[in-house]
Image 1: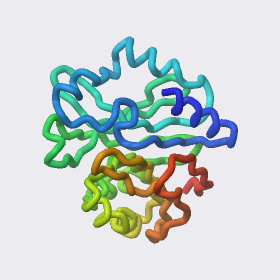
Image 2: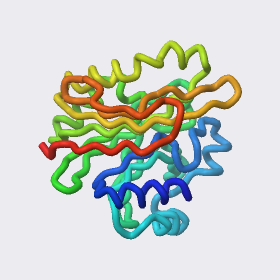
Image 3: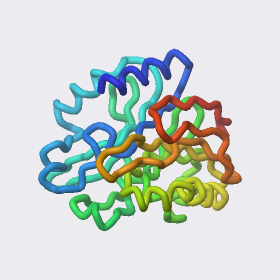
Image 4: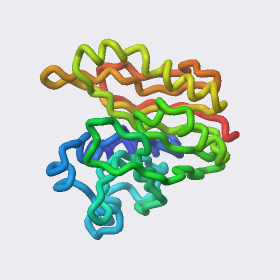
Length: 224
C-alpha cells in the first residue's frame, strides 16, 4: 500500500486521470484456497472502506487487482476506486486451471472517467476475443488489462514476446487502445516478463516499460 500510495501521488502530480495496477496487486496472486480466503476482502466491509481511505482523496481513478470474497465465493477482481470510493468492479471471466478456487465473473466491467470510456479484462481474459468485444460493444475506446505473468522460467521465456502479440490481436479486432499493467521480479524458478505497455488500435506497441524493474508509465490517449 505504501508503494501504491506513492505511485498514486506521482500520477496525480502529472495530471493522470486513470491509473492501473497489476492483477492481484493488493494481496498477491493467491490461488490456494486457504490463503486466498484468509486474505480476501469483502468490498462492502468496513475493512475495505478503511483501505480505500488510505488512498489520497484526489487524483486519478484507480484500477487495482485484488482477491475478493462475496459470501462463500472468491473472485479474482479488479476494483475501480476514485477519491476513496468504490466505483465498481470487474471479476475475471476466464479462469486458468490453477485458479479453481475462484468463481468466474459476469460483470460488464465498463466505466467512464474524464470523457473516456474504458473496459477491463484481467490477464488470461485477453486470450478471448469475446471478452474484448464485450467492452467495445459497450462503447469503450480503451481496454485496461491488469496482469500477473510471473511464470516458471521456461514458460516465461516462451511467452516473453507473445503477450503483446495476443493483446495486439484484441486491439485489431475491436479498434480499442489497450493498457497492460504487469508484474516484475524473480523468486526461485519464477520470473515475470509480462509487459507493462500501451498498444494502439492497430496492435502496435506505442510505449513500454523495461521488463526488469517497476515503474510508472504515463501516456496521453484520445478520448474517442
